[in-house]
Length: 152
Image (cartoon, rainbow, N blue to C red; front, side, top):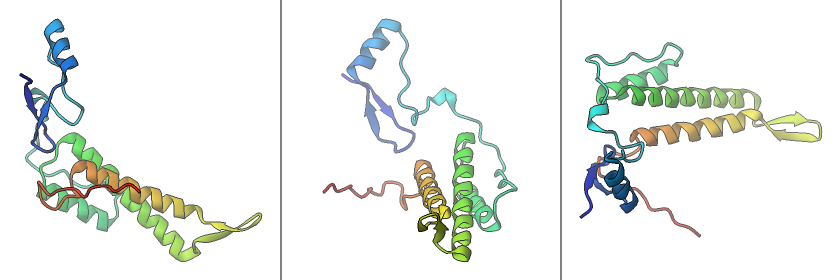
């Protein structure tokens, strides 16, 4: 019979692999599951007060930070991911402002070319979305189903 483990992220049980079971029998050490699953002894102490937003964030992003930390109980590594997401949001907004002022094309040696801020805005927005998804802030309800990806 395969032991069940609870995942921190979604609460569903995960089955351990036969190789992991054999390794546990031989070494006497139970392997820890993937990085997203933390052992009960490795839980960080959550401070009583909400961490303040970093000083370099824009007022709009600092307000987003405060809304998230008051609504969710974050561990230290989650706060770091939130900081990175907020910085990416700020960087995307800064690139959008540059594009609004200068346009999406610049003169190059061989004629007009795409402004470098287009790539910065695109990459920063994608990074922010990825980090917010990693934190689980992209799902409205706790057990809401994710859309399936369709391949063509």
